Amino acid sequence: MNIATPLNIIDFDAVNRIAGQDLVSEVRKIDDEQYYPEAIMRAFGGTGAYGTHLAGQDASCDLGPAILSMARASETCLSTGFCMWCQDALGWYIASSDNAWLKTNILPKVARGEILGGTGMSNPMKAIANIEKMKLKGTRVDGGYRVTGVLPWVSNLSEDGWFGMMFAVEGEDKGVMAIAQADASKSVKLRLDHEFVAMGGTATCQVMFRDVFIPDEQVIGDPAMPFIRRIRGGFVLLQCGMAAGMIKSSIDLIRKMEGPLGHVNRYLEKGADDLEAEYTALVADVLEMSRTPYDLSDGYWKRVLQARLRGGELAVEAAHYAMLHSGARGYVSGGEAQRRLREAYFVAIVTPATKHLRKMLADLDA
Ligand SMILES: Cc1cc2nc3c(=O)[nH]c(=O)nc-3n(C[C@H](O)[C@H](O)[C@H](O)COP(=O)(O)OP(=O)(O)OC[C@H]3O[C@@H](n4cnc5c(N)ncnc54)[C@H](O)[C@@H]3O)c2cc1C
Image (cartoon, rainbow, N blue to C red; front, top):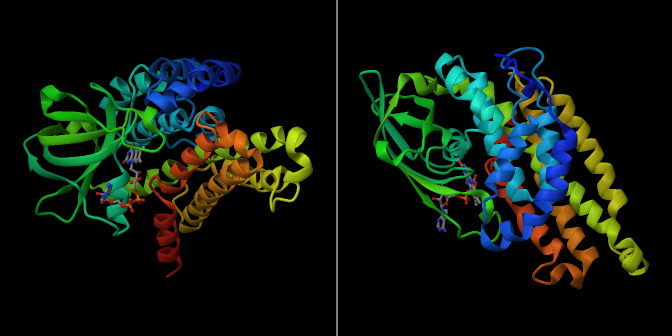
């Protein structure tokens, strides 16, 4: 489906302004007080940032602009960049599905940031890779499924928000993927979880399902596996926006230190130029792959996993060098480098985490 609105176009000047001004003035509050920047998330929706990757299985589908917008926000604040990924993933699932009800009633509002939400797919992704067991279980009933279980973390989510999820069907060897709504009156309950060293401003919740009815009109993959194959490339590739923003901002931090500390920083093993070369190559690779997100081949999937792995590793490495180059300036409690370093590890541990990526790559080669 093509959303025939001006949201097919991103206003990059507006994205730049929001990320470079509005978000800059809120970033300390986001990090220190676990403040969720809802107004900024909605404002990004108004720029078209969540709308351009939703062309569905059309040859024109391109994830590039969504990735670049997410990268721009992540340069300032990874919590916000991650929330953009959550929002993008939600839209990506619906646009990639054949579900007319969701495409008509939910997708346009997600694209504009009027509905905010995310994805609880970390556990299923790990279950598919034989890392852990499925946490949600469903039973077939008339007109849908009844689902019970707990998802430990779903971000960018508040009461009434929507999110992608998957459950194992009791007595059958299959999973089903659907879009659910956080609605306490329907027994989908949220509990905020802020116990993190960074990323507390992501509205991350524990989501409890107690015998929740998921109607067929909210199902996007039944059985889930063929659908997962369709969305997996975009799911993982979009995350590279977070990595790109983190790497770029770390390089910028290193360059800022060249004036005051360049005479001694030049003895460090890596500097801005070394990281820049790897960053440029990574972004070029990601943007090229972004033009064919529905390529189902193993070769493409492997290349996506390699880029995502490199993105996570380079994000941590760049933030590490930004810390070393910044020295004490970065080590004070309000220092930018220490915040970036705490945030950078998230790129490497969010699903698919570094170890998960390495397992998938090893399994592909086996
Ligand atoms: C800030 C934040 C936001 C997130 N947002 C989302 C989201 O929107 N959607 C989503 O699906 N996932 C989300 N996650 C989960 C994330 O994607 C990863 O699944 C998670 O970070 C762990 O991944 P891992 O592969 O390193 O697993 P590991 O940490 O190696 O293993 C995970 C296992 O450890 C268990 N475990 C977790 N915490 C503890 C603990 N304190 N003590 C003992 N055992 C524990 C879990 O039950 C799980 O079975 C979020 C995580 C964080 C930290």
